[in-house]
Length: 163
Image 1 (cartoon, rainbow, N blue to C red):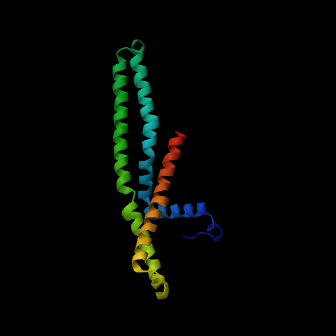
Image 2: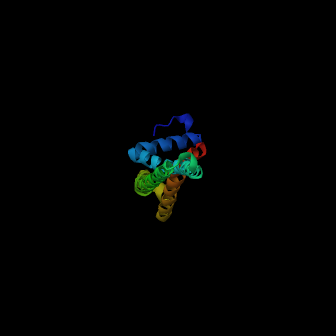
Image 3: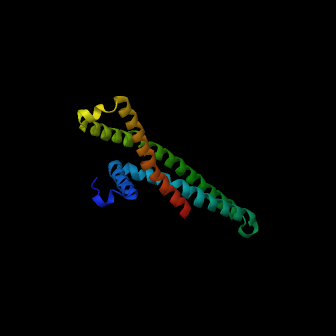
């Protein structure tokens, strides 16, 4: 990471560069996961509410639309069914592509192991090996959950608020 020295003191800039690095590392999988997580708010707020609105409007104004009401209600039901299928598909994508275990944690574990191997003998012996292991596991889990995954959830929440 090429972080300018003056930005190292700000937690927001550090989070920005961390997410930027994760995007670079994950590549296309990052964008697939992001799309998959952004669809559920759209489905809940836009599709479902419009389907219910139009379906109830057409059903309650039977005289104005006549026999065409059956086809309209059937069509809007098919829109809801298609949206549910896309919702299920995006759920499967985000579970498969999110990379919280292998894609992110393994990368962080490798980075921490490299850092551990770069320490001097004296520095490594100040703390027992089991403490290094548990600190690494907790740090990697914290980076993955609090940094990487929360960036997805933040964007999902912002889209939900916007809609």
